[in-house]
Image (cartoon, rainbow, N blue to C red; front, side, top):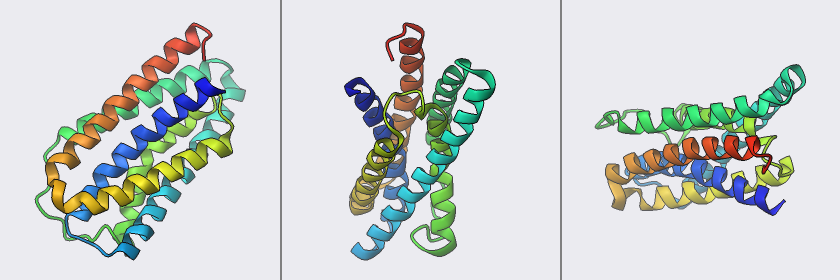
Amino acid sequence: MSEGLVKIFIVALALALDVFAVSIGVGIRGIRNRRKIQVGIAFACAEVGMTLLGAGLGALAGRLIGGVAGYLGFIALFGVGVYMMRESLTELSETSRLDLSRGHGLLIASFAISLDSLGIGFSILYIGVPMPLSLVIIAITNIASTTLGLTLGRWLGRYAERYAALLGGLLLAATGVVFAILKALHRG
């Protein structure tokens, strides 16, 4: 299980970097501490919810296609990582009229950042860590990274926002490849 814990911490870190990047973007405007906690909880709930949905889809795929489902999950993980890297390299809009820290803006931001968790959920069943523990680790990591990103947003600006998302995508893509290799070698 300790090998599985390392894997889930890597996945949680990759998700957290993506959330951190979005949080920096939201934090550039500056928001109150209470709002930071609300945004952190919203982002974490979205990540955990999409992870659960992905896990459900992964379990269904596992029943339908057996052991190949684990590889498909790791391919999805790789694909999500590549997508995150590609998105981080596209031009960021200068300003956004939509407030991502409340209301519809927060809902849209939460959904957008949690889409990668769908792919994570698909592969999380094959990491070897009990689902409740995985979800707690992902939630805590996301709340912490959101709060940190919002707090540092004004200081770090758009440079850190772009490269945190790139690093998160790179980490997810590499994780997908490494996990697939470990599964092929019957090591994880």
